[in-house]
Image 1 (cartoon, rainbow, N blue to C red):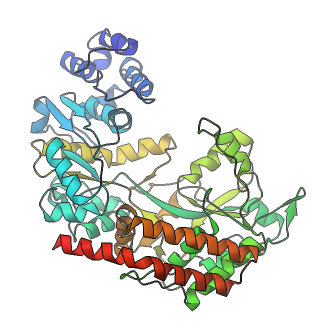
Image 2: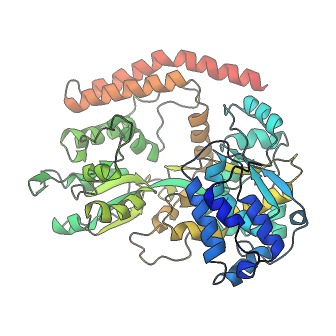
Image 3: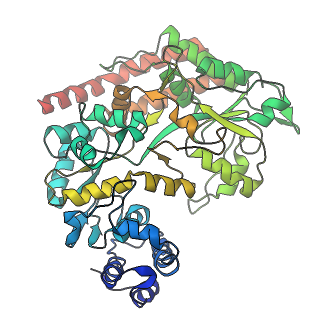
Length: 514
């Protein structure tokens, strides 16, 4: 253990034992664990200091009843108990991005509850290829794994990760308190069984500026609108101005190109650029309709594609500059299609740039055939327990805390940007609250396919080439250098020319699996 302690660690180590009702053994264990080994310096380390000093030296007295519950084993609504694993020192090895960020997010509250536990974060794997990952797993033997969703299938079939249903039932860990699509999608990855959990997921929604809709006498958007309806609504702002500046009906995420918006609109209606055998499906009436509506929006300038500020020479850009350039936050876009974490940007812009318009959130656009299904939904990582771990009980305790109601509520109170896998119990303002992100279900099999294609595309150069070609053809149609029909036809032909090596790679992977 690293004993080169900073001043705050020294200060904590000299704190009087027994403060705030903690007994001597508990205080000693906490003091040992705050000298956490770190693989590198991190910007999160000062936060460790503040968290522990405040927790122990300031909050110890007035939170004594709550903290006594922690030490009694009361975690996230579970009945108080004493776990056998918690009676001896245990080194819990956890796969995560780095030690500092894990301790800041999860580790410190956990070791306060379980002072016998020490956390170690091994070096991250260099590849998400299943075979490479298994080599890494055998080398470092982490107790708790952080894996992409698509890896759950391979790891579970080989018996490398622990099924959780029986444990959840045994401990009264209520899975129906999670957002149902999260649990359903992880089950889909595990062929019906639950092999992991996640504290967070990501999805999109449609944000709208109610003040602008009221000002121009236009009815605001509603939940479960189709993309056709959203684009028709956006087009009603065509030609509108405020303070001499144009009002856009729709703005997209920073960096989302016209072709990426075309893909998102098509995806909501179940359209894909290729079928499951990688045959291009671009030249179809459905795709042509999407291209026509989106290209018209950019060409007629009721969809925003303005200039965003560039990064400085050091690669950084201030949030204030981004907010000022954002047409939704500067009051010149009626709607914007953004991720769930954009909600915190809207809140922050009030202080940063004085955004004062009345606004709201409705669900992301849906297909007319499947009005209850979100097409934009992802689970970046699943946390699973190593089936060969000697510390499975401790790893399960950590996983319960990471995904439990207390951690979710704590992050909500801090306006944490990530979207919790647990829906909010209630909201003070349903218009601007989180509930819109939880109103739709998902097609779990489609989510799983998309996650795998993201981490293991059939041929990365094929995907990148198709996207580049699509962007080139879309911009040509928008600028008028070619017709819409020519753009779609050209992309179909270019994709057909690019697909041969991708098919070869896909067949090679099938053979390797057999």
